[in-house]
Length: 73
Picture 1 (tube, rainbow, N blue to C red):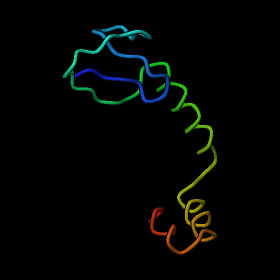
Picture 2 (picture 1 turned 30 degrees about the vertical axis):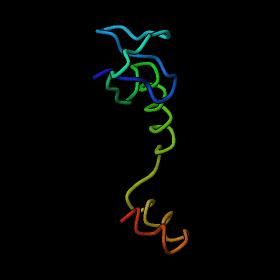
Picture 3 (picture 1 turned 45 degrees about the vertical axis):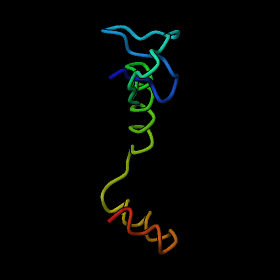
């Protein structure tokens, strides 16, 4: 199965990620993150969580609409 980065659309080919790739007619694909995009996403996630405690999540969720409150629980 061929992996495509869901952010930059590069394709994993062995241990390399290519920007240009020609797919076979019935080639099966899956999506994920290439190493570069993964590092960027994780850095953004860690930055957004900086200083957030479990109690902070509860306070944050209590201000949201009722149908979204269940997402933090």
